[in-house]
Image 1 (cartoon, rainbow, N blue to C red):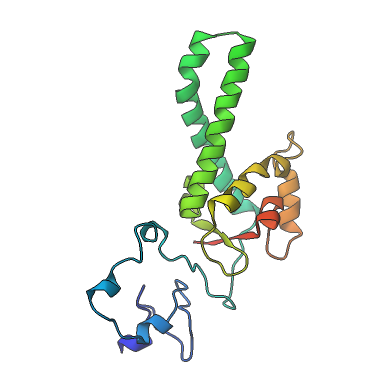
Image 2: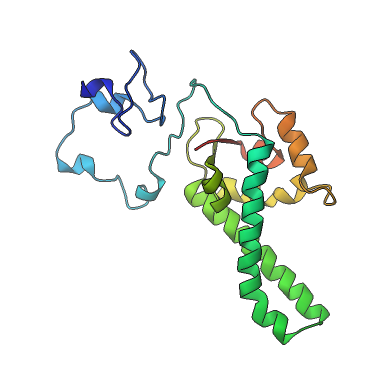
Length: 198
C-alpha cells in the first residue's frame, strides 16, 4: 500500500514511524490528502534547490562522520580551490613576477576564493564538492535541517583555528572530532552543526 511507503524514496515505512528510515522525509505527509495541483509545486523559488531540508529524523540512528572521510573531503576541496586560485591569480602572478606585492595580492586572492568556495557551497547545498564525492553533508545539530550561510561562514572561518598546528594540518580539528560524542570540530561546535552521511 502507498500509505506504508515513503513518498520521497519509496522505502517501506515501519509501523508508527513518523520519518523515513532511508531519507529522513516526514511520513505524515504521505497520509495527508493532496489538495489540487498547487500541492505539487515548491513553496517558493528558493525552496526548490534546498529540498530535503530535514536531512535526518531526530531520534533515528544518526551516523556522525569522523576524521578519515572528512580528511578525504577537505583534501579534494583544497585541490579544487588550488586549481581555481591558480587559474584566477595567474595573470597577476605573471604581471608582478618575483614581486613582494604580487605575492601578497596572490595570497589575498586565494583566501577570498577559499572563503567563497566553502561558504557558498555549504550555505546552499550543505556540501562542498569534496563532501559530495565522499557523500557526507553538514546539517544543523538541533534538527538535522539545512544550515544557513551564516553557519557556513562560522565553520569556514574557524578552519583557520582547526588547522593548528600547521606543520601537521588540522591536528587540532582531528583531536576535537575524536573527543566529541557528535564528532564536532571547533567550527561545528560554535556553529552548532554536525556532519552526517548524505
